[in-house]
Length: 406
Image 1 (cartoon, rainbow, N blue to C red):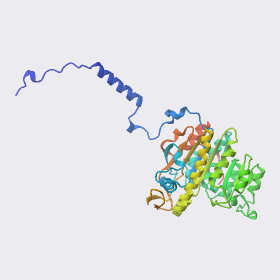
Image 2 (image 1 turned 90 degrees about the vertical axis):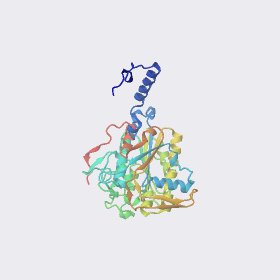
Image 3 (image 1 turned 135 degrees about the vertical axis):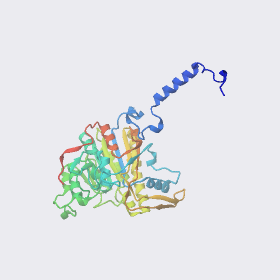
Image 4 (image 1 turned 180 degrees about the vertical axis):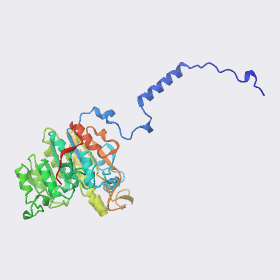
C-alpha cells in the first residue's frame, strides 16, 4: 500500500532557540576546562598543575620509614592504642598516597633494594646498597642534600649500618658488608647519626668486629664528631656533628636507651641549627623484625614507638613552618590481617600469612610545604625525585661516574 502524500511530510527547517545555543556553548566550555573525563585521568596528580605548586619548597625534609609497615599494621596500632574511632599521630598527616615497592629483580623487595629506591630514585637488585648490578654507586638524596649545603642525619633503632640507613650514605654490593658501610658513612660526613651498631666501628681489641684494625669511633672524634653512648650524653651534645651509638648491635628500644622519639627530637634540634636547612631519615627499624617473628605484641609496641617519633617530627614541623614530613614504608612484612577484636582495642586477633616480606603497596603520608605532591598511586622511586626537585638538584637520579670497588 502506498503512503498518502501527507503521511511522510518533508522535514521541517532546523531551529535552535537562543537558550539552547547558550547551554550548548556552556557545556563545551566546561568540557574544555575540565579536560578528560574522570575515568580517563591518571591516578597520580600532575604536580605541575597542583595548587600546592604555588608554595615555596620546604627548607627541611624529614623522611620517616616504618620498616615493614603495612596498612594492617597501622590500623592494628591505631585500634590497640586509641580504639576503633581513635587516631595515631601518623593519621594527623593530611595527605595520603600509595607507592609500589618491587625491586629491579623481584616482585617482593628486601629493605636494601626498597631503601635504595627511596634514597636514589632508581631500582636495584635485592641486597644491594645504593649500587647498580654492575657496581656503580647511585647518588643518594642525602648526598645531594649534603652537596647543596644542607645538614644531614640518620636516626634508627637498628644498627646505624643496617640496610635502610646504609642506602642513604654508603655504596656496597651486599647489605652484610656493615664494616665497609660504617667506614663510608663516616667518610661521607653525615652530621648526625643515632642508633646501634657499635661493633662495626671497633676492632676486636676494643670489643668490635672490624678486621682492618681501625677504630672508627676514635677516627670520628678526630673528624670533629661528639661521640655519645647514652641518653644523658645525647641531651648534652651541642656540636654540629654527633655520632650516637647506643648499643653493641641493634638497640633494645627499652630504657635506659633513648627512645626513637627522644632521638628524633634531639636530632631535629641539632640539625635545625644549620642555617641552610637539613635532610634527615628516621626509621622505625624493628616493626619489620616483629613481622618476621609473627609477634603481635612486639609489632604493636614497635608501631607505637615509631608513632611517637612521628608525633615528635610533626610537632617540630608545625612549629617551624618550613619543614616537609613524609612518612612511608619500604615494604610490608608478615602478610598481617586483623581478624577480630574489640572496638576499644582491648582485644585484637591478628593473623599472619608469612614470615617474609610481601609485595603489597605501602602507604605514604605527608605534611608541610608541597605535601600535595605525594597524593596518588606511584612508584617508590618518585619520592626522592620530588625531594631533589625541592633542593634544585638537576642531575638526579644518576649513577656515579666511577665504579665503587666490590
